[in-house]
Length: 442
Image (cartoon, rainbow, N blue to C red; front, top):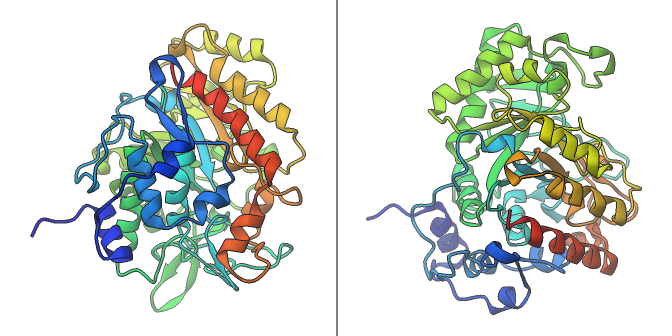
Protein backbone atom coordinates (compact mmCIF):
# COMPACT_ATOMS: atom_id res chain seq x y z
CA UNK A 1 0.00 0.00 0.00
CA UNK A 2 1.35 3.42 -0.96
CA UNK A 3 2.40 5.57 1.96
CA UNK A 4 0.04 8.49 2.53
CA UNK A 5 1.14 12.09 2.38
CA UNK A 6 0.78 13.53 5.95
CA UNK A 7 -2.00 15.86 4.75
CA UNK A 8 -4.02 12.95 3.40
CA UNK A 9 -3.30 10.97 6.57
CA UNK A 10 -4.69 13.89 8.57
CA UNK A 11 -7.79 14.15 6.37
CA UNK A 12 -8.56 10.45 6.67
CA UNK A 13 -8.26 10.58 10.45
CA UNK A 14 -10.56 13.57 10.88
CA UNK A 15 -13.16 12.63 8.25
CA UNK A 16 -12.62 9.00 7.19
CA UNK A 17 -11.59 9.99 3.64
CA UNK A 18 -9.18 12.36 1.88
CA UNK A 19 -11.54 13.54 -0.86
CA UNK A 20 -11.56 17.34 -1.19
CA UNK A 21 -14.30 19.52 -2.65
CA UNK A 22 -13.86 22.90 -4.35
CA UNK A 23 -14.41 25.65 -1.77
CA UNK A 24 -16.52 28.36 -3.36
CA UNK A 25 -16.67 30.25 -0.04
CA UNK A 26 -12.91 30.85 -0.19
CA UNK A 27 -12.87 31.92 -3.82
CA UNK A 28 -15.62 34.47 -3.15
CA UNK A 29 -13.41 36.04 -0.45
CA UNK A 30 -10.13 35.79 -2.33
CA UNK A 31 -7.84 38.73 -2.97
CA UNK A 32 -5.49 38.64 -5.95
CA UNK A 33 -2.04 39.96 -6.64
CA UNK A 34 -1.68 42.85 -9.09
CA UNK A 35 -0.04 42.54 -12.50
CA UNK A 36 2.26 39.55 -12.86
CA UNK A 37 1.01 38.26 -9.50
CA UNK A 38 -2.63 38.05 -10.58
CA UNK A 39 -2.76 34.28 -10.00
CA UNK A 40 -1.61 34.57 -6.39
CA UNK A 41 -4.64 34.35 -4.08
CA UNK A 42 -5.42 34.53 -0.37
CA UNK A 43 -8.43 35.33 1.80
CA UNK A 44 -8.67 38.86 3.20
CA UNK A 45 -11.20 41.34 4.59
CA UNK A 46 -11.61 38.62 7.19
CA UNK A 47 -11.89 38.08 10.93
CA UNK A 48 -9.59 35.21 11.98
CA UNK A 49 -12.45 33.56 13.86
CA UNK A 50 -14.22 33.02 10.52
CA UNK A 51 -11.34 30.76 9.51
CA UNK A 52 -10.54 29.23 12.91
CA UNK A 53 -14.15 28.12 13.39
CA UNK A 54 -14.16 26.24 10.09
CA UNK A 55 -13.46 22.53 10.00
CA UNK A 56 -9.92 21.42 9.28
CA UNK A 57 -11.03 19.65 6.12
CA UNK A 58 -12.59 22.85 4.77
CA UNK A 59 -9.38 24.67 5.64
CA UNK A 60 -7.39 22.22 3.49
CA UNK A 61 -9.97 22.51 0.71
CA UNK A 62 -9.59 26.29 0.90
CA UNK A 63 -5.81 26.02 0.49
CA UNK A 64 -6.19 23.78 -2.57
CA UNK A 65 -8.91 25.99 -4.06
CA UNK A 66 -6.59 29.02 -3.86
CA UNK A 67 -3.81 27.24 -5.75
CA UNK A 68 -1.67 29.59 -7.83
CA UNK A 69 -1.56 26.89 -10.52
CA UNK A 70 -5.37 27.19 -10.71
CA UNK A 71 -5.64 23.41 -10.66
CA UNK A 72 -8.00 21.87 -8.11
CA UNK A 73 -6.75 18.60 -6.64
CA UNK A 74 -9.50 16.39 -5.25
CA UNK A 75 -6.75 14.53 -3.40
CA UNK A 76 -3.88 16.50 -1.93
CA UNK A 77 -0.70 15.88 -3.99
CA UNK A 78 1.71 13.35 -2.53
CA UNK A 79 5.00 15.19 -3.14
CA UNK A 80 5.21 18.88 -2.18
CA UNK A 81 8.35 20.92 -2.69
CA UNK A 82 9.13 24.13 -0.89
CA UNK A 83 9.12 27.21 -3.16
CA UNK A 84 12.62 27.66 -4.53
CA UNK A 85 14.16 31.11 -4.04
CA UNK A 86 17.76 29.91 -3.99
CA UNK A 87 20.09 29.15 -1.12
CA UNK A 88 20.08 32.71 0.23
CA UNK A 89 16.32 33.33 0.19
CA UNK A 90 16.40 34.24 3.89
CA UNK A 91 18.42 37.39 3.14
CA UNK A 92 15.37 38.92 1.36
CA UNK A 93 12.37 37.25 3.02
CA UNK A 94 9.43 38.68 4.92
CA UNK A 95 9.09 36.81 8.21
CA UNK A 96 5.56 36.63 9.66
CA UNK A 97 5.40 35.21 13.19
CA UNK A 98 2.21 33.37 14.16
CA UNK A 99 1.62 32.82 17.86
CA UNK A 100 0.28 29.31 17.37
CA UNK A 101 -0.31 28.96 21.12
CA UNK A 102 -2.60 32.00 21.26
CA UNK A 103 -4.78 30.64 18.45
CA UNK A 104 -4.80 27.08 19.85
CA UNK A 105 -7.98 25.29 20.92
CA UNK A 106 -8.86 26.72 24.35
CA UNK A 107 -11.31 24.35 25.97
CA UNK A 108 -12.06 25.20 29.60
CA UNK A 109 -8.56 25.26 31.18
CA UNK A 110 -6.83 23.17 28.51
CA UNK A 111 -4.87 24.40 25.49
CA UNK A 112 -4.05 22.21 22.50
CA UNK A 113 -3.82 21.77 18.73
CA UNK A 114 -2.14 25.09 17.91
CA UNK A 115 -0.61 23.54 14.77
CA UNK A 116 -4.09 22.79 13.41
CA UNK A 117 -5.19 26.38 14.06
CA UNK A 118 -2.09 27.58 12.20
CA UNK A 119 -3.16 25.42 9.24
CA UNK A 120 -6.56 27.11 9.28
CA UNK A 121 -4.95 30.56 9.03
CA UNK A 122 -2.63 29.66 6.13
CA UNK A 123 -5.17 30.60 3.47
CA UNK A 124 -5.19 34.16 4.87
CA UNK A 125 -1.39 34.55 4.70
CA UNK A 126 -0.41 36.10 1.35
CA UNK A 127 1.85 33.80 -0.70
CA UNK A 128 5.41 34.70 -1.61
CA UNK A 129 6.21 37.39 -4.16
CA UNK A 130 7.95 36.94 -7.49
CA UNK A 131 11.37 37.93 -6.14
CA UNK A 132 11.24 37.03 -2.45
CA UNK A 133 9.61 34.62 -0.03
CA UNK A 134 7.10 35.11 2.76
CA UNK A 135 8.05 32.87 5.69
CA UNK A 136 5.72 31.89 8.55
CA UNK A 137 7.53 31.59 11.90
CA UNK A 138 5.76 29.62 14.65
CA UNK A 139 6.20 31.00 18.17
CA UNK A 140 6.06 27.66 19.96
CA UNK A 141 7.14 24.12 19.15
CA UNK A 142 8.64 22.73 22.36
CA UNK A 143 6.93 22.37 25.77
CA UNK A 144 7.08 25.50 27.89
CA UNK A 145 8.24 25.41 31.50
CA UNK A 146 5.36 27.23 33.16
CA UNK A 147 2.32 25.02 32.60
CA UNK A 148 2.34 23.46 29.16
CA UNK A 149 -1.05 22.32 27.90
CA UNK A 150 -3.02 24.74 30.11
CA UNK A 151 -4.26 28.28 29.84
CA UNK A 152 -4.05 30.57 32.84
CA UNK A 153 -5.40 33.92 33.99
CA UNK A 154 -4.14 36.96 32.03
CA UNK A 155 -1.94 38.01 34.96
CA UNK A 156 -0.27 34.62 35.54
CA UNK A 157 3.08 33.89 33.89
CA UNK A 158 3.03 31.15 31.27
CA UNK A 159 5.87 32.30 29.05
CA UNK A 160 6.82 30.68 25.75
CA UNK A 161 10.31 32.04 26.40
CA UNK A 162 10.99 29.15 28.78
CA UNK A 163 11.18 25.78 27.03
CA UNK A 164 12.05 22.15 27.61
CA UNK A 165 14.19 20.12 25.25
CA UNK A 166 14.44 16.33 25.02
CA UNK A 167 10.72 16.06 25.87
CA UNK A 168 8.90 15.90 22.55
CA UNK A 169 6.60 18.73 21.52
CA UNK A 170 4.26 21.10 23.29
CA UNK A 171 0.76 19.97 24.20
CA UNK A 172 -0.29 23.53 23.33
CA UNK A 173 0.73 22.82 19.75
CA UNK A 174 0.01 19.20 18.87
CA UNK A 175 -3.37 17.45 18.97
CA UNK A 176 -2.99 14.42 21.25
CA UNK A 177 -6.48 13.16 20.38
CA UNK A 178 -5.20 12.24 16.93
CA UNK A 179 -3.55 8.88 16.29
CA UNK A 180 -1.31 10.75 13.90
CA UNK A 181 2.20 11.37 15.28
CA UNK A 182 3.26 14.89 16.30
CA UNK A 183 5.96 14.70 13.63
CA UNK A 184 3.39 14.09 10.90
CA UNK A 185 1.23 16.92 12.22
CA UNK A 186 4.20 19.24 11.66
CA UNK A 187 4.85 17.66 8.25
CA UNK A 188 1.23 18.29 7.27
CA UNK A 189 1.52 21.96 8.29
CA UNK A 190 4.71 22.36 6.29
CA UNK A 191 3.33 20.64 3.19
CA UNK A 192 0.25 22.87 3.24
CA UNK A 193 2.35 26.01 3.76
CA UNK A 194 4.68 25.03 0.91
CA UNK A 195 1.67 24.36 -1.31
CA UNK A 196 0.56 27.91 -0.47
CA UNK A 197 3.93 29.20 -1.69
CA UNK A 198 5.21 29.95 1.82
CA UNK A 199 8.40 29.12 3.67
CA UNK A 200 8.21 28.03 7.33
CA UNK A 201 10.30 28.30 10.48
CA UNK A 202 10.19 28.45 14.27
CA UNK A 203 11.41 30.58 17.19
CA UNK A 204 14.25 29.16 19.31
CA UNK A 205 15.54 30.31 22.71
CA UNK A 206 19.29 30.43 23.38
CA UNK A 207 19.46 31.99 26.88
CA UNK A 208 20.51 29.02 29.01
CA UNK A 209 18.37 29.79 32.08
CA UNK A 210 15.31 29.83 29.82
CA UNK A 211 15.94 26.22 28.74
CA UNK A 212 15.63 22.96 30.65
CA UNK A 213 16.63 19.44 29.63
CA UNK A 214 14.04 16.77 30.42
CA UNK A 215 15.20 13.37 31.62
CA UNK A 216 12.92 10.32 31.75
CA UNK A 217 13.71 9.16 35.30
CA UNK A 218 14.91 12.24 37.16
CA UNK A 219 14.27 15.94 37.62
CA UNK A 220 14.58 18.39 34.76
CA UNK A 221 18.12 19.65 34.35
CA UNK A 222 19.13 23.28 33.87
CA UNK A 223 20.60 23.82 30.40
CA UNK A 224 24.27 24.82 30.30
CA UNK A 225 26.15 25.80 27.14
CA UNK A 226 29.47 24.60 28.53
CA UNK A 227 28.11 21.04 28.68
CA UNK A 228 28.81 19.32 25.39
CA UNK A 229 25.86 16.94 25.84
CA UNK A 230 23.48 19.89 26.18
CA UNK A 231 24.87 21.54 23.08
CA UNK A 232 24.35 18.25 21.24
CA UNK A 233 20.71 18.00 22.37
CA UNK A 234 20.12 21.57 21.16
CA UNK A 235 21.53 20.72 17.72
CA UNK A 236 19.58 17.47 17.51
CA UNK A 237 16.28 19.17 18.33
CA UNK A 238 16.82 21.77 15.60
CA UNK A 239 17.84 19.10 13.10
CA UNK A 240 14.69 17.05 13.84
CA UNK A 241 12.46 20.02 13.04
CA UNK A 242 14.34 20.91 9.87
CA UNK A 243 13.90 17.32 8.75
CA UNK A 244 10.14 17.72 9.29
CA UNK A 245 10.07 20.49 6.68
CA UNK A 246 10.88 23.73 8.53
CA UNK A 247 13.43 25.90 6.75
CA UNK A 248 14.14 28.83 9.06
CA UNK A 249 15.04 29.36 12.71
CA UNK A 250 14.57 32.68 14.49
CA UNK A 251 17.07 32.86 17.36
CA UNK A 252 15.93 34.97 20.30
CA UNK A 253 18.64 37.29 21.75
CA UNK A 254 21.10 36.41 18.96
CA UNK A 255 22.58 39.92 18.99
CA UNK A 256 24.36 39.19 22.26
CA UNK A 257 25.98 35.86 21.36
CA UNK A 258 29.58 35.79 22.52
CA UNK A 259 29.04 38.62 25.00
CA UNK A 260 28.34 41.34 22.41
CA UNK A 261 26.56 44.48 23.75
CA UNK A 262 25.38 42.65 26.87
CA UNK A 263 24.56 45.92 28.62
CA UNK A 264 21.29 45.75 26.66
CA UNK A 265 20.74 42.01 27.11
CA UNK A 266 17.35 41.23 28.68
CA UNK A 267 17.41 37.42 28.52
CA UNK A 268 18.15 35.16 31.48
CA UNK A 269 21.39 33.19 31.66
CA UNK A 270 24.49 32.78 29.55
CA UNK A 271 24.49 32.67 25.76
CA UNK A 272 26.61 30.50 23.46
CA UNK A 273 30.07 31.69 22.57
CA UNK A 274 30.63 33.14 19.10
CA UNK A 275 32.60 30.19 17.71
CA UNK A 276 30.19 27.80 19.42
CA UNK A 277 27.26 29.34 17.56
CA UNK A 278 29.20 29.12 14.30
CA UNK A 279 29.67 25.41 15.00
CA UNK A 280 25.98 24.90 15.89
CA UNK A 281 24.68 26.57 12.73
CA UNK A 282 27.17 24.72 10.57
CA UNK A 283 26.19 21.41 12.17
CA UNK A 284 22.48 22.03 11.55
CA UNK A 285 23.19 22.70 7.89
CA UNK A 286 25.58 19.75 7.57
CA UNK A 287 23.40 17.18 9.35
CA UNK A 288 20.26 18.13 7.43
CA UNK A 289 22.27 18.37 4.18
CA UNK A 290 20.35 21.54 3.36
CA UNK A 291 22.17 24.52 1.90
CA UNK A 292 19.05 26.69 1.72
CA UNK A 293 18.22 27.18 5.41
CA UNK A 294 17.68 30.65 6.83
CA UNK A 295 18.93 31.63 10.28
CA UNK A 296 17.58 34.92 11.61
CA UNK A 297 18.98 36.64 14.68
CA UNK A 298 16.94 38.93 16.90
CA UNK A 299 18.53 42.40 16.59
CA UNK A 300 21.71 40.85 15.21
CA UNK A 301 22.11 43.80 12.95
CA UNK A 302 24.92 46.19 13.87
CA UNK A 303 28.26 44.53 13.12
CA UNK A 304 27.15 43.06 9.79
CA UNK A 305 30.31 41.05 9.16
CA UNK A 306 30.19 39.55 12.65
CA UNK A 307 26.74 38.08 12.04
CA UNK A 308 27.40 37.05 8.45
CA UNK A 309 30.45 35.08 9.51
CA UNK A 310 28.47 33.56 12.36
CA UNK A 311 26.21 31.98 9.74
CA UNK A 312 23.11 34.18 9.98
CA UNK A 313 21.14 35.35 6.95
CA UNK A 314 19.14 38.21 8.43
CA UNK A 315 18.88 40.40 11.48
CA UNK A 316 16.02 42.53 12.76
CA UNK A 317 15.36 46.05 13.99
CA UNK A 318 18.35 47.91 12.58
CA UNK A 319 16.83 50.29 10.04
CA UNK A 320 14.33 53.01 11.03
CA UNK A 321 11.25 51.54 9.39
CA UNK A 322 9.17 54.69 9.83
CA UNK A 323 11.24 56.60 7.28
CA UNK A 324 10.91 55.46 3.66
CA UNK A 325 14.10 57.17 2.48
CA UNK A 326 16.17 55.64 5.29
CA UNK A 327 15.00 52.14 4.42
CA UNK A 328 15.68 52.80 0.74
CA UNK A 329 19.14 54.17 1.55
CA UNK A 330 20.10 51.01 3.45
CA UNK A 331 18.68 48.71 0.78
CA UNK A 332 20.91 50.51 -1.74
CA UNK A 333 23.94 50.53 0.57
CA UNK A 334 23.67 46.78 1.26
CA UNK A 335 22.61 45.59 -2.19
CA UNK A 336 25.87 43.74 -2.78
CA UNK A 337 25.52 41.82 0.51
CA UNK A 338 23.76 38.78 -0.90
CA UNK A 339 24.06 36.31 1.99
CA UNK A 340 23.27 38.48 5.03
CA UNK A 341 21.51 41.79 5.67
CA UNK A 342 20.01 43.58 8.67
CA UNK A 343 16.29 44.06 8.43
CA UNK A 344 13.30 46.22 9.18
CA UNK A 345 10.27 45.29 11.23
CA UNK A 346 6.65 46.30 11.47
CA UNK A 347 6.65 44.99 15.04
CA UNK A 348 8.37 42.31 17.11
CA UNK A 349 7.52 39.91 19.92
CA UNK A 350 8.13 42.64 22.52
CA UNK A 351 5.39 44.85 21.06
CA UNK A 352 3.16 46.09 23.88
CA UNK A 353 0.46 47.58 21.65
CA UNK A 354 -0.72 51.15 21.29
CA UNK A 355 0.55 51.58 17.73
CA UNK A 356 -2.13 52.90 15.39
CA UNK A 357 -3.34 51.00 12.36
CA UNK A 358 -2.07 53.83 10.18
CA UNK A 359 1.45 53.52 11.58
CA UNK A 360 1.47 49.75 11.07
CA UNK A 361 0.30 50.16 7.47
CA UNK A 362 2.95 52.81 6.84
CA UNK A 363 5.66 50.51 8.17
CA UNK A 364 4.39 47.64 6.04
CA UNK A 365 4.60 49.80 2.90
CA UNK A 366 8.17 50.80 3.73
CA UNK A 367 9.16 47.14 4.23
CA UNK A 368 7.76 46.19 0.84
CA UNK A 369 8.52 49.16 -1.41
CA UNK A 370 11.57 51.06 -0.09
CA UNK A 371 14.13 50.05 -2.70
CA UNK A 372 15.31 50.95 -6.19
CA UNK A 373 15.18 47.37 -7.50
CA UNK A 374 13.31 44.42 -5.96
CA UNK A 375 16.58 42.46 -5.86
CA UNK A 376 17.87 44.98 -3.29
CA UNK A 377 15.03 44.59 -0.79
CA UNK A 378 15.89 44.21 2.91
CA UNK A 379 14.44 41.36 4.97
CA UNK A 380 11.46 42.27 7.14
CA UNK A 381 9.81 40.91 10.25
CA UNK A 382 6.24 41.24 11.49
CA UNK A 383 3.83 39.66 13.94
CA UNK A 384 0.42 38.02 13.66
CA UNK A 385 -1.07 41.27 14.97
CA UNK A 386 0.28 43.15 11.94
CA UNK A 387 -2.09 41.14 9.74
CA UNK A 388 -4.84 40.27 12.21
CA UNK A 389 -5.23 42.94 14.95
CA UNK A 390 -5.73 41.69 18.50
CA UNK A 391 -8.43 42.87 20.91
CA UNK A 392 -7.76 46.25 22.49
CA UNK A 393 -6.75 45.01 25.98
CA UNK A 394 -3.96 42.64 24.96
CA UNK A 395 -0.86 42.72 22.78
CA UNK A 396 1.77 40.53 21.16
CA UNK A 397 4.16 40.53 24.13
CA UNK A 398 1.41 39.80 26.63
CA UNK A 399 0.41 36.71 24.67
CA UNK A 400 4.03 35.54 24.59
CA UNK A 401 4.34 35.94 28.38
CA UNK A 402 0.90 34.60 29.37
CA UNK A 403 -1.64 32.18 27.94
CA UNK A 404 -5.13 33.46 28.73
CA UNK A 405 -8.35 32.15 27.26
CA UNK A 406 -10.77 34.85 26.17
CA UNK A 407 -13.62 32.38 25.94
CA UNK A 408 -16.83 33.49 27.66
CA UNK A 409 -18.24 29.96 27.91
CA UNK A 410 -15.20 27.66 27.94
CA UNK A 411 -15.40 26.84 24.22
CA UNK A 412 -12.70 27.35 21.57
CA UNK A 413 -15.23 29.15 19.34
CA UNK A 414 -15.73 31.90 21.92
CA UNK A 415 -11.96 32.30 22.48
CA UNK A 416 -11.29 32.75 18.77
CA UNK A 417 -14.14 35.26 18.45
CA UNK A 418 -12.87 37.35 21.35
CA UNK A 419 -9.09 37.17 20.82
CA UNK A 420 -9.03 39.53 17.86
CA UNK A 421 -10.39 43.00 17.05
CA UNK A 422 -13.83 43.07 15.46
CA UNK A 423 -14.95 45.11 12.44
CA UNK A 424 -12.10 47.62 12.69
CA UNK A 425 -9.76 44.63 12.50
CA UNK A 426 -11.54 43.41 9.39
CA UNK A 427 -11.12 46.80 7.71
CA UNK A 428 -7.43 46.87 8.65
CA UNK A 429 -6.93 43.37 7.24
CA UNK A 430 -8.46 44.58 3.98
CA UNK A 431 -5.96 47.46 3.87
CA UNK A 432 -3.07 45.08 4.55
CA UNK A 433 -4.25 42.92 1.64
CA UNK A 434 -4.18 45.91 -0.72
CA UNK A 435 -0.52 46.51 0.17
CA UNK A 436 0.40 42.85 -0.33
CA UNK A 437 -1.48 42.76 -3.64
CA UNK A 438 0.94 45.28 -5.17
CA UNK A 439 4.03 43.87 -3.41
CA UNK A 440 3.56 40.31 -4.74
CA UNK A 441 4.30 41.40 -8.30
CA UNK A 442 7.88 42.38 -7.55
